[in-house]
Image (cartoon, rainbow, N blue to C red; front, top):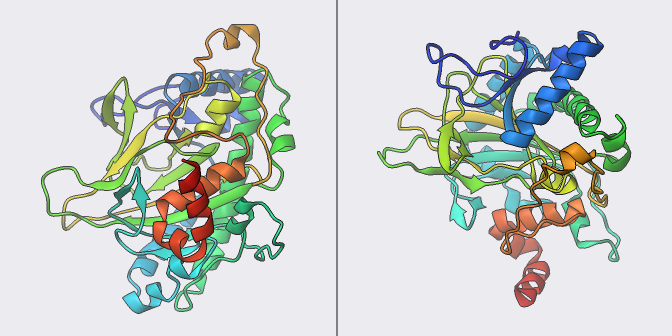
Length: 353
């Protein structure tokens, strides 16, 4: 169900002060004309804002409910069970991060989470590129075996949604429909199951600091009825509250890079809830294979004329090779893991800066 009807829209103020477009993915299956209109709306939303709500994904309320319960059950585990899979035990940055254990822009984020990536064997080749250190097994809580099953189902369904969106973007940008399929390889995915504890503080507290996502595409599920996500528009922070049955979707820096700034990655942040409330969210990051480069898309002249160029941040360079972006982000976000397992990489980057 699309609460805003067809097309790009916003909720009326009587319902909520939504300031992001709302798109219904099921329009892609409603005939060629409706699919073409959806692609136009998708292109406009990510050219103008870089964020939108997505309905019509086919994700059932039953699956959402199971994921929600699994998240709540995980964070309710005894501290010892969670710390048994703490991410400092993983050179691949997997597992549990206690409150205050992650940083954004150098500042501590007030959240706890578990990070889950593709389940693969670690790379033992000493000649492998640095970013190959991100490849490896996950850490799962022994006390909650059902978590693995619901995460696998969530991953498979959202991977399908992401592929559908990327094919729509490709056509909307004048490229072949399979453009991203051909250049992605085996996708690098990351699921974070996150809990933001409440803070007894009237001033905004950094749940996660202002940042742009480093990859291509993020699909965010937010616990019903909860706020806290804010998106920067025209220099102002605007709220993006949870919408029943909808994901919040945003593009990352790599898609901005591939379109030379025609599509934009947008700063966003999470403000901690007030005590005694808390908030669960589950972002799903869909990105290319670590060793793939996402080449520049040759835009049609009318779109190329509106490309703004890539936002340059000397402190946060964008690499064409996805693995370099991913490694850069993980080393910065988890300095304790970096110090324990990757001190050589940290030293090399410090010396080069």
